[in-house]
Length: 435
Image (cartoon, rainbow, N blue to C red; front, side):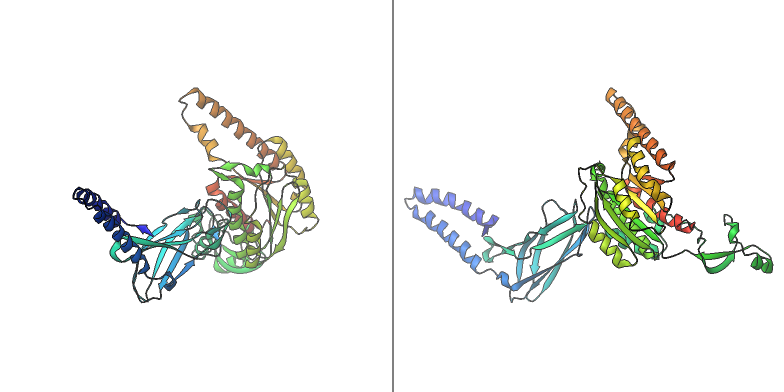
């Protein structure tokens, strides 16, 4: 029972009444007034509609996506014969950002209503809804009756799986550029003939069909379908270097979002996709397979990954992979290297793989470091910050040069561009038939 403003106002009116009746020698009148007011308040709670007539259903995706707004819908049904008015408050985990937590409630008998809000989880993991709280208006408006609907429910927060839906939709509409993915105009040099078309500037002369060109009196090129059944293997370093944060989010989380986009793109292209996770030893390994079910398996394998305060051993990881898979693949390694020594160790581990596989090393760059190089110097401290940023950038460039000299491709991208640049690289390699 929660008193309303009306109750407190009526109780306050008892103060001058008590002063007056006391002066008249009848103080019991004020006491009777207060007792009557309390009795009316208690009686009104007994007349409130029973909560047993309410049915609540909460609808949301089986898994929520981290750091994006997820839609939550509450359906409330009134199976009773009385109207219900009041306020409803849903209780997700307190550290989740909710667009709205409280709603006005006005339910007719045998009616239902729907409330919608968004929930933004700050990190991956498991948690639960605490329940749904109601404050129902009681007759006379003196108090509200507070109760809890048993709506506790577990929540699982994964990397940004909502982005996969956007990718699928934009791919169908041919609008992948809107999320930063660039596809080559070339249809590739695959082995399966698709069609003939007029030559356009920039086409490869190897695709010219000279017989068709002679018949038509102009250059005609052959189009081939990009090859399918190729292999993409994704390696994730979860060692101490992935504990670093960029824009307040750990590098590992940025990596997992980009990884899902690449996995989904490869699955839609009909390619095999595999996964290996390592730090000082191999933590998880999923052999390459085709299909959307494989995407689901990879999502389940990575959703609870946590970077560990350990030094990674890529030699152990890629020796393990080499003993289990030798078919030529695109090997994408998510890691971090910020000095020459670490780059040399990585080149030593990936060098043997690069002889057989097309190998790409991906790392997340910090836009704040680039910003420091262009920020005007307003104080002595700014000069030191720029000098530190310059040293960091020089070390990272030197490390990239070491990997490039070892026949390894590198991709250094800021978080907002990482997924788009990665999938663009994959499409480019397929269009050039490098796999």
